[in-house]
Each structure stands twice: as structure tokens, then as C-alpha cells.
Image 1 (cartoon, rainbow, N blue to C red):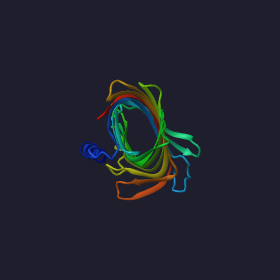
Image 2 (image 1 turned 180 degrees about the vertical axis):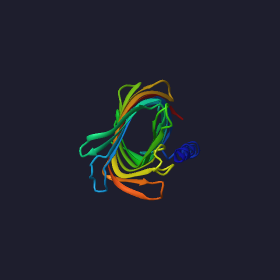
Image 3 (image 1 turned 60 degrees about the vertical axis):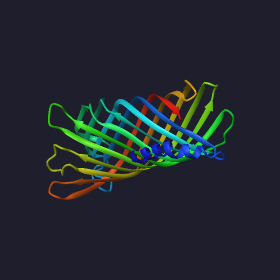
Image 4 (image 1 turned 90 degrees about the vertical axis):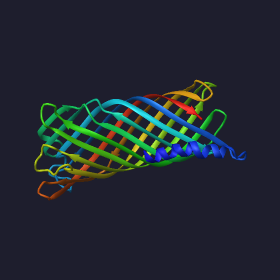
Amino acid sequence: MKLLIILVLVAFNIVPLAAQQRDISVLRPVIYIGTGFFFESLNWSIAGTAEGKNPNILSELKWTRQEGPLVEFGVHIGLRQFFAEGGCYYGRIYNGKVSDSDFSKDDRDERVFYTVLPTKKGFSSITSLGLGYSCGSTAKTQVRISAGPMKRTSRLFLSDPGSNLNSSYAPNFTGWYFKTKVVKRLSKVYSFDLSIAYNQLHYKAKANWNLIEEFEHPVSFKHKAKGFGLNCEPSLKTRLGSKTILSFGAAAWFTQTGRGTDQLFLANGKTSITQLNEVKQGGIIVKTGVNYNF
């Protein structure tokens, strides 16, 4: 988020100075502000041992259809064919459900514990900052490639208003995105964008299982793994004036880790490590917003 603020300040200070140089072709900064609605899910499971056995799935958590409103902000600054871009969105979770299952045998056999609870709180956010290059441009089509660091953070809850249960899980994907965007001009008023991105990610998470006295608090266990992600984002834009563009868009994304570690912290100071089998997270976004060209 701090890097994005710096990028905006650069847009309003450096770009106007560069525009005074007649031999430099400058694309004026573009600011995007939008809102929408998101649907998100995340699940993970661990094994009974570090070798992935006894059983191969010991415990499994699934947060499904975590949904709520979101706000989004973005900036784009260009100089000739090169550009810098940044963006962030924040979504508040107001509805969904979570299930918790424990098993005593392999392949989810002989379930010994199961509960399903509603979720009414939490959040999801994404921040990215990158550099890019516009290539393969024609009168009606432009291709842009970009890359940079990104971070996807959430805070999920396993809580019950009828008891003192208020456990939390905070997943964190950090890494790099590599994106290709195609901009197709349909007419003088309308255009269509399609972005496809690949993410190379590191996964970390912290949890606080507040009712289990044998666990340490506020950090009961940590997860670590490596993974990847895919993102697809189409958008239809219509020009409202010389500087303002209205957009209607959507996004679908998916992230997954390989095997990792689950490190448990006990109240007596001891720790134990088991295998984190995998983490899967995905979601859909529908949104609308305004692009303003300075």
C-alpha cells in the first residue's frame, strides 16, 4: 500500500515536468476508483505426521462463499511504450460458512469431529505494483506485458456467537505477477480489455485457536508452503467524456500450494511439525468503476 501511494505522488509531480520536454512522448497518469462484490473460498488440510501419514488427512478446514462488498483503487503512468502500474482492493466479509473436520484414518475415513458455522466477519485484500511495456500495437489493438511484486492477504474466522469460540486464520500469499493485457478498441466509445496473469507465490499463515488451552496464544500454529496462482480479468469500457471512462468488469482467480509445513506451538513451550498437504484459494469479483485521465 505504501508503494502505491508513492507511485501516485510520482504521477502528480514527475509526469507534469516530463511533459514540458517536447522530445518526450508522455502518457498522462490514469487513476481508477471502483467498487463491487466478491465471492471467495479457501481450504487447507494437514496430515498426522511430517511424512504425511497417520492419517494422510488429519484435519481439514473449508471457508466457502466468503462474500461482501469491495473498494478498489489503481494508477497507471506511461512514458513512451513503458509504464508503471499499481493497484489495491479491500473487501469486507459479511457472509459465508466454515467447516472443520477431523479424521482418524487415511483418505477422510472415520470422521471423528465435524462442525459447520456461519461466518459474518473477516476481510480480503490485494496490493500490486509493477512495470510494463506496450508492444504489438495497431490502430485498434494494443498488447501490454507487465510484472511486479504482489501480496494477497485475508483474515478468516471460525467463531460462534453462542459460545466463546473466536478462532482466526490469517493467510498471506506474497510473490510476483506476470501479466499480459490485450486492449481492443471496438468503436470511438467502447473498448474491451482482457488480462491474464500468472503468480509465483510463497504462502504463510498464522492461526489462533482460542479455545484450545493446550495451544499457545495468540499464535497457535503457522503454515508455510510454495505455490502459484492464475488470474483472468475481462472489462468493458465506455467513454463518458474526454477524460472519463466508465468500466464494467469481472475477475476470476485461483491459487494453490504444494506440500508445506504445519508448525504447532504448545502452551508448555514445545513445538511439533506435521505436513501441510495443500492450500487452495479462489474467488470471483464483479465490479464497476471510473477511469480518469489527467
